[in-house]
Length: 287
Image: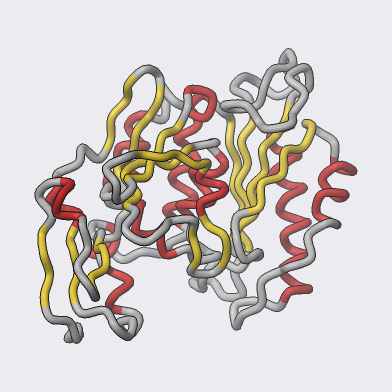
């Protein structure tokens, strides 16, 4: 495909991220070959030249660079999953992409998140692990936000003009968590119509109560909590902290959802019903 732009700049340092009129950020770029270039975009600024370390562990947290490729994420997680069980969630989320070899080695974690696609599996992964996003601001500062709050709707995020997603940080609780995932599509190799991920405190089911991985807002620390994240069937990631084994509480939470996504990959009523089914399966597995 011939991209109708004037050129691409390679960012070598943070100052290079100051966008000129018509420029947009690039991290991987595989999506560019599936959609027409947005009107008004005349140039791209490639983040890969910044040379960010794709994967590092410091102070008990895992930091994944926004420019980490999906293949690198998959391979590093597979190697580290025995030490950090929460990373077993990476494999089913990467599988949800249905990626070719070439795309897996080019597409990036940050690119998938910044697209804000309802079916974006990186949101399902990092939101379940209670990760936070580090964001560089144009004034040289940094801000953080929960990954669960980064996407606000189809193609929309909380990123302001000139802001750059730098990294995702998974806390120790997320790395130690037990996890589960369920995916459903209308066809065997179709885009995810429902993707449900979940995480619970590390240890065997039924063990002594403890806080949810990384802490769950509003959760009673004396109650073992399962963090369920719904994506693909809703316009933006939906996080449901549910007491372990409390299927009635899960039903009550799902009853409050009124904006089921509607596109050729599934009707709202069907998505609502399948989300409920898969969410109960995740809750049962992690309780």
